[in-house]
Image (cartoon, rainbow, N blue to C red; front, side, top):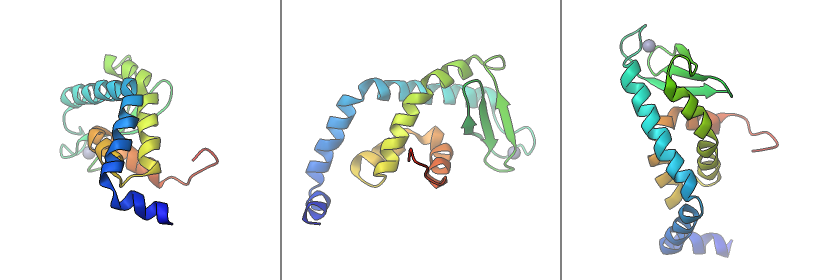
Length: 140
Ligand SMILES: [Zn+2]
């Protein structure tokens, strides 16, 4: 209990821990930048939703071979493979890095590092939020 307040009252210590985590996970953070870039590239190619012409497509789900994007407005799903867009191959390859970041955010979403990571995962916000709302299994 005392430790809890100690960490809460000491943002300096929190920032120190954040820097330490970021140093340790530099390759992950590098891949996160690439993931952001690739999602931006896909977003420019896809543009607005074909069905409603209003929503943007956001990452919804993925498996080893495909990405599912969902319209933020009409909630229609789009399934993409690397045959449709070359970005998909690289997005899928770097997805484990997003998982590392996601686990850290889930562990402590409101500390300095959690907020900073959330900020840097903006193209994946829907995906992260959705995963956080899933019931936690043994691995969670
Ligand atoms: Zn739509």
